[in-house]
Image 1 (cartoon, rainbow, N blue to C red):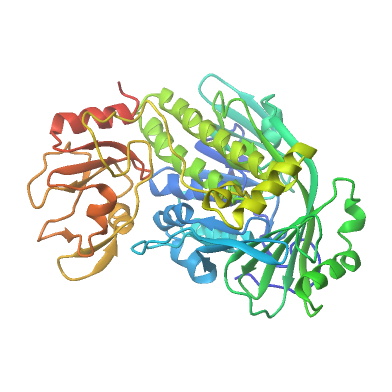
Image 2: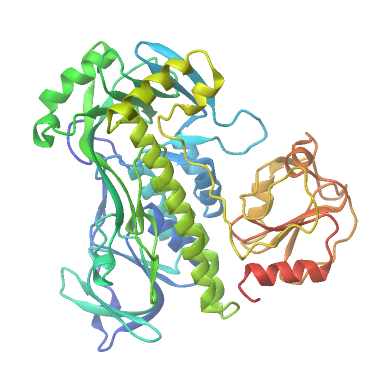
Length: 544
C-alpha cells in the first residue's frame, strides 16, 4: 500500500487520500455524533478503532489528506504492540517492522556496555519494533476502513469549538465550505501544535531545550546488527552524541547532536548533511529519505480534560524522542481512555470515571517528562558541573555496574504504573507478581487441544472486558456475570506448560488477578470470593 520513493525531502513515502463530501454537510442543523476524534495519527486512529470495536460510532477528522510527512516516530514498544493486537493490526506491524531487543552504548570508539530489554523468553511480542510512522498509520487506516462504525474524513479542519452543557459543537472547514457537527465528546489527538488546545484556552508548561538534533533517514545496504547503538563523543562526531537505528526497506535512522547555535536552514541542507553521515559510516554510498532538525521539548497541559474535550498524545504532552516515549505514551493514553469512555457512554459508569484518565495519564506524562529531562541533561549538559559529572560517570561505566546504571542515553519506554483509586489494595502480603496498577506480563500457555498461545491472546479473546486470571487448578470460581475468566492449570482449559505463569504471577492454588479492560491489574487475591471481585470491579469502574 505504501510505496517508498528514494530521495531527500519530507515524506517521500506517502498515501494520498481523496476528499469526499459527507451527508452531514447537507444538514440544516449540526449532525449529532457520540464521539468525534480530531487527528488521524497513530493515537487518534487507534482510539477510534478501540471505541468502534466496543460498539460505538466514531467520526475521525483530519485536516490533511495524506500519510507520509517523514518517518517521524519509529520505535514502538511491546506494550503498544499488545494494544495493536487487540485492535487487529499487531501482526501486520510486526511482520513489516524490524524487531530488536538489544542496545549498545559507546563512549568514543569503545563499547561501554550492552543491554537486553527482553532477556527472558516466553513473550509473544518483542521489546520493540522499528517501523516508520507512515506504515503504522497506513495499516491503522486500513483497519479503520474495515469498520463501518468509523467515518474517517480527510481535509476536514476544525476551525471553531463551542462547549455546551451536554455536548460540543464543532465548525469544520472543507473544500466545499464549512459545516458543523455536534458531539457528546471530542477527543483531541491533533498533535503538538494542537489547534483544539488553543480553542479551549489551554497552554503547555514545561521546558524547551536549546540543543538541536539532526535526523537523517538514509537508504543503504549495511551489515550493522539490528540493535540500538548510541554514542557519547564518537570519533566521527567529536564532543556530541549520535544514535543509529535500522528501519524496514534498508533505511537507517541517524540522530546527530548539533550545537544550540547551529543554523537549522544551513544544517539540514543535503550537501551539508552528507559529509557528517559519510564520516560516521566511512562511505557515502547512501541516499537520503528524510532530513529534519528538532529541539527537545518536555511539556504538558495542566489538565487533559476541558469540559467535554479530552486531550491525548502529543496534543496533551510532549517529550524528547530519545527513549521512544512519545508515540508509545500516546497509545497508552488511547488505551486508557477508550474503555472508560465506553462505560460512560453506555451509562454503566459515571462521567467522573473520565477524571481518572487525567489522573493516571498526567502522572504517566510527568514520569516520561522526568525521564526525558534527565536524559537530555546527561546528553547535553548545561553547566560545567553537569559536564564533569557525565565525564566521571562515563569513566566509571567502563569498569563498574553502578556506573553503567547511571549512564543515560534515553531510558526506553516501559508500561506506566498507576497509583490510582481504581486499584484495590492487597489484603495480604505478596512476595512477587504484578501489583495493582501495573500492566499484566505476558506468558506462554497451552490449550487442552495442544495449541500454543499467549496470555495476551487469551485476554484479547475475552472481548475487552474485566477478566479474572485464575490459577485455581480446575476449581470453580464464582465471578460476577459481566466478568470473564481465564483459568490456568485447568486440564480442560489452559496450562502453564513452561512454568512462566507461575513464576511471573507468584501463583499458588487459588491465586487470581482481576484485569481491567486495558490489561492493567485492578486487584489480586489469594482466595477470591464473588463479593470481593464485585467490589474490586465497582471500584475500578468508579462506582464506589
